[in-house]
Image (cartoon, rainbow, N blue to C red):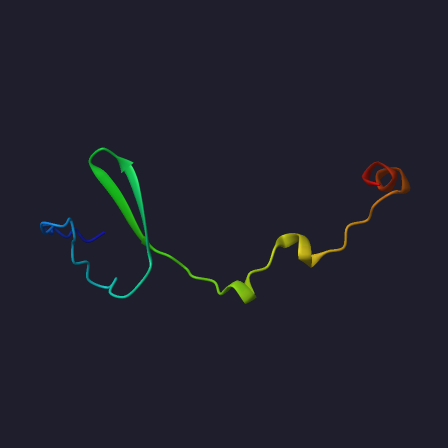
Length: 67
């Protein structure tokens, strides 16, 4: 892993090469360390739930409980 040393400006901003115009996830690992990752953005119309991929078989007894 390449180590970069940067100085934050008066507003706490830091220039990070390779991250321009991207959405980032910043996680604080501990008091002295933060982890920066590029977020993967999924358009809402492409968002799927795993439950959509299979039909759920419901027994008559379970169906009676749901009613």
